[in-house]
Each structure stands twice: as C-alpha cells, then as structure tokens.
Image 1 (spheres, rainbow, N blue to C red):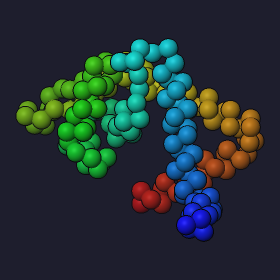
Image 2: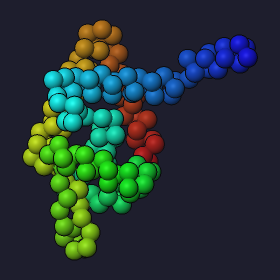
Image 3: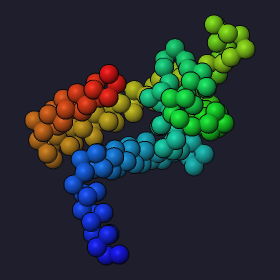
Image 4: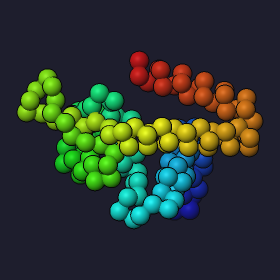
Length: 153
C-alpha cells in the first residue's frame, strides 16, 4: 500500500496539469477569503458562485445554457442563481428572443463585483511577480494563453 501511495504522490507532484489544478484551487481559495473578509455569513461568496461567472455573458445567459456549459443540472444552476440574486449580483429578465425563457444577467452591483474580483486577481498576480519575478509571470501568462487557445480551438 505504501508503495502505491508513494507512486501516486510522486506522479501527482510530477504532473504539470495536476499542479495547475492545485494552483487554481489555492488561488480561488485565496481570492474568496479576501472577497469574504468582513462579509455577513449569508452574503459570503462560495466557490459555486465563482464557478458560474466565467459562463455568464454580459448580455445575459439562459440557465439551460449555464447548466450545459458547467455540465451540471439546471436545478443546481438555479440554486446558485437564486443565491446570487439574493446577494443582489444577478437578476433574471425575460429573454427577448423567447418570451417564455429567462436570461440571467449581472446587476450593476454584480458588474462592480466582477471588476473588484478582477482587480483582486491583478493584485495577487503582482504579488506573485514580486515573489517569483515579473518575467516568470509573463512567461506563464503567455504559455497559459497558448494552452487556452489550443484547447478552445
């Protein structure tokens, strides 16, 4: 058993993508902790709230589209959207292309929150540049953008 555990841990440590997943999780936790500082318990951001943001367009997105993009149920997305509505960050509006459907859109507070969140990410990136060197962070950014382009293409 110890041999298996040692082999597994070694492979995880050597896997670039495993390290990337862990870095992503830790950065997300750090950002959430900063965003939640001083917030009331019922107004705290959760990872599920942040997971929806990249899939939500400024023009609005249907819950069915969000569910498909996130590969989770419409009910799960609906619950997260409801929580974000209660926080005043999104709202549901009629879809102009189909009166029966609703679009989830950012409120003004939600858009401001997005900008604040992006500012926080920039601050974390600057801290990393100080710790690791500006060139390292720039190279990582270029590499990740290439990876993203490849995966999206």
